[in-house]
Image 1: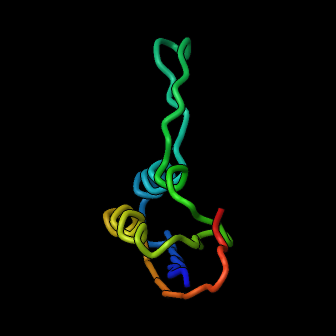
Image 2: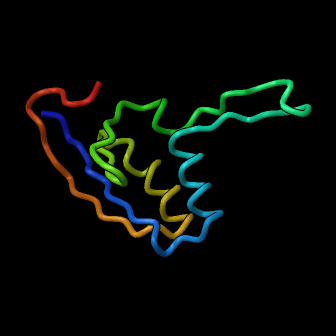
Image 3: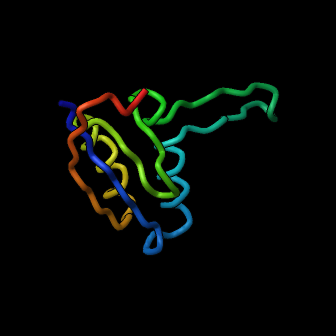
Length: 93
């Protein structure tokens, strides 16, 4: 059996810089330098772990990776709800 966590977050109480920080940390971003001559792809947390974006603001991850995501969300004042689930089959890629 696979232990999963369903993380739901809401960014209504976060300001614009906190919303941007959350999205960049979770999904990654492109960084430009030297007047956009060079482009670097900065990876996010979700690119390195098996996960599934269920809906807007809802992420399904393995239970062992839950704390990594929650630390980013708590740091930036997101409203969080976590549900722990069990699955008989592999749901994540």
